Structure formats: C-alpha cells, structure tokens
Image 1 (cartoon, each protein chain N blue to C red):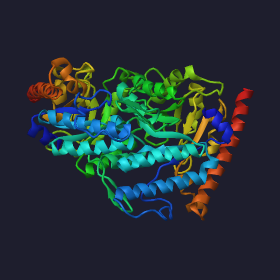
Image 2 (spheres, rainbow over the protein chains, first blue to last red):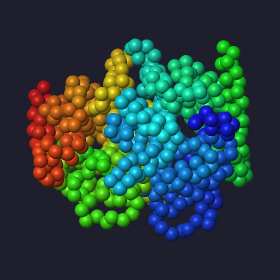
Image 3 (cartoon, rainbow over the protein chains, first blue to last red):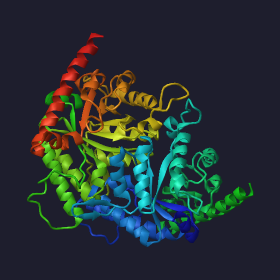
Image 4 (cartoon, helix red, strand yellow):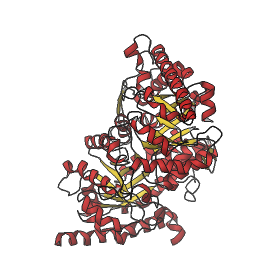
Length: 307
Length: 307
C-alpha cells in the first residue's frame, strides 16, 4: 500500500500538520463565521488553515502526518477538525499518519488502536475510527503494549511506526543508553520492530511495522538499516530541527518506500524565508524536498543493488 | 495539594474510569434518549455509566483516573464526555488524573500539556484544558520531552506521573533491561523522576513529579522507594491484573500520599463476584480497598519513622 503510493506519487514527503492556533497563515480566517466560543472559533480557523496547507502542498506529498496534540488542545472541537482533515487528506490522494505516540497495556492499546484505525463495536453499531494508514507508537512498555496496534492495523491494511531513535536532543537520555548485553536501548527497540514486522513483508520490500528515526542524527541511520532491513523509516527533523535530506540515503536501501521524510515548520513557514504568498512558498518548499528525496532515494537503491 | 486531599478524604484509592462501550452496567442507559448516531448514543451511554460509577464510589476515593483511550474511541463525542466527567469528578471532591501516557518533542509536549492542564491561548481568547490535577507521561524520549509537562503542571499547581515500571508483563522487554553502567532502564527513569521533582518538595513530604509503579511486581517497590524517596507512586495492577494492596507498604514510606492505589475492573465489575446491584458492589469494593490501603499506609509510615 505504502510502496505503491510512493511509486504512484513519486514522493516520499510527509506534510506535518501541526497547527499552532497562535501562528496560522495570514488570511486563513478570511470569510469564516465570527460567532461562537473561543474554542469553536479557533477550531474553525485551524481547520481552514490546515485545509489550505494540504491543498497547497498535496501534489508534492505522499502523506499527511496529523500531530494529535495540536488538535487535543481544542478538546472535542479539535477531534472534529482532526476527523475532517483525515478525510480531506484522503480525498486529496494522501495517506494519513496519525502521530500520537500512543502506548499502553493490552486492553488500552486496543482501544487507542480502534480510535486510530478501524473503529469499535458498540451496542448501537460500529463507531468508525480515524481511518489512519499509519500511526506512531511508543514502545517503552514492551511488546505486549505494541502488538494490539500491529493487529488492529493489519486488519485494515494499515501499519505502525515505532519510536526507535527520535529527533530531539533528549533522545540521548534513555534511547541511547548502552545495555549490559551490548547495543543500546534504541537498538533493542529496533530488534522488536524487525521481529514484529517480518511476517508481513510484501513484494514491496518493506514491512508494515516501521520506525521513527530522527533525521537529526544521520550517523544512526546506517546502523538502523542493518538492524531493520525491511522497515519503513519515518524521518522527522528535516528543516526546523536541523536535519538535511541529503544525509538520509541509508533509509532508502530497501527501495523508494524505505524512507518517509516528514517536514512541518519548514513547509508551513517557508514564506518567512522565501517571501510571497504562504501557500505558494509552502508548495515550492514541498516540491524542493520532494525532488531532493526522490533523487537521493534513486541513488541509494542503486547503491544497495550493487553491493 | 495531593497530600492534603489524601488526608482530608482518608483515602488513597483512585477509581480507574476505563469504560468499554460493550460492557457497561446493566441499566446504565435507562431513561436516555434513543436518537442520534451510534457514536452519539454510545457517548451518552458511556457518560451515564461513568457518572453512576463515580457517584457510587466517590466517598471511598481520592481521585478518578480517566483512561483517555476509552474516550478517544468515540472521537469528538468522547472528548466531550471526558470533559464532562472531569468536571463531575471535581464537583464530587475528587482529584482528576488524566491517564494518556503522552510524550513528544518539546513543542508537542507543551501542546499535550496545554490540553491536559491549564489550556492554550488563541486569537479569540484562552481555550481551557481538561484541568487535570495529575497526568501520566511516557519518558522514553528523554528529559526535554518531559519538562514541558512539569512546567505546565507547576503553573496550575498540578503534577505529573512518569511511567517508571509498569504493570504489564511486557514491561520486562524494555523497562527491565540491564544497563552497561549498572541498574536498569526503569531505574534510570526513576533517577529522572527524582531529579525533576526535587525543587517542589513541600511540607507534605511528596514532590510534584511522581511515578507509575505497577503493583504486579511488588519486589520492585522497595528499590523504587530508595531511588525516589519523595515521589508519589501511582500503583496500577491491583485486582484484575493480580496485584495485592497488602504488598504495597514501601510505597507509603514518605507518608500517606506516597502511594495512590488505582483500581478499574475490580471495582466496576465487583457485582460479578459479590452479586447484587453494580453500584452497591462497586461502593463496597472501593471501601474495602480504601480500608486496606489506609491501614497499610499507617503501618508503613510508622515503620519508616522507626528506622
């Protein structure tokens, strides 16, 4: 599913949708109704901004990554916006990545998975989930906290992305700790990704259990690729966090869908650097990233085939 | 805040509110309107059930723990129920624990914290958060992913509870890994809890950064107390997961508020074992737990003072 979509759209770019209600595009609220509570008005404005952002950049992207925190800030109104945007992204030909970094004991993990993927049964019929194609998962609580997500995703042809080595400086505090048995915490999580993902490797060369691998520490990518030869890597940290597309080549070893390059602030705020209309600047920056990643991924696959 | 409330209510029992829409109390839907979508009808039923559960057991409890996953399953309607229940619990004299196990990079962590604690500024005014008194946090991503929660909590006199050693069998997979430098992953997280919490130790003897310590492995509790002498422990796993109140004594070394005993299924399903009316059975089981924990906590504090 993912590999086919990457090929069809010739893109590995993931638009990070991460709206700060205090820093939306100028003009995003033009023509909106002005009534209602602060919560409802903010939700309406966030929705308009995010739809405009998706419309401006969809052509250069393969997926949107919806940052759940930014919608939860608006409570129930925010969850309505989230569901609307997931539908809008799908209709724009994009995959939907629910970025919530959930993780909990089995029954609770199953509830989170129902909310993000297929839905849940009630005495009144099925209540649909968000319909995500991929969701980020926090594996700290271990294998039995991850498996319900993997199962629920498989039932609907979706996938999961486990946090392995994240893009923030604090990732060093726990994820990088050296283990008595050798390797680090993140390398142990990488092994879990590989264990859980194997049964589903398709002709695409990538499995349905992927990894979040921060683009800010490209030195880790080659090692990560050794440990997880078939996992898709979601690569945050390009742009505002300092990562560069050019250093991501090892991610694409299994093929074009081996890496998904996610960018949020560098796209939405491109007009600050490039000037002009925010939508045009965002489109231009997304297209620049698309070309850079597509080019790197071709070289990397060829390099792997030669080995 | 927590210590005073524990003293006032003479209880360390946390009612886990974890509604499965397919397994609610018989009669919970009596008198409810029957129109609307499956989502709206399920939300109405879940709300009625959870309010009845809180009403039945509030007297024996100090807090409710709202399991966010169970509300997210219902999307926007679920978040409305969540906000309603937080208010209902507060009006019943209970503290509110938001159990979402969130964790993310700094700006995103700040957004989650705004959603759970004080709220967020928008161009239209402040949008209130859930108003939680405590929230569970996943520290895998390190110190800079936790600090925004600590700051946001302190601003409103609330606190956080970091996952340290959880109650599920899979906790052994990552949390128990021995480190090259000695100790385990969970012991390293325990050190982080202690570092972050120290500045706020009040006269109560407990800090505003606590720990989730599963009650299913009581052997860990004494060690955890050495590493985190002033942290409040949230103790899940009593009842359905096999933990026993009697083994929790080390938690109460810093005082009565050193441990919060959370129980979900054992209270809500007490009528299956005890028979009779679900509300009466739940009240009876909550009161039984309250007495057991209160009694253990007295002995433990005395024992500590003698050392």
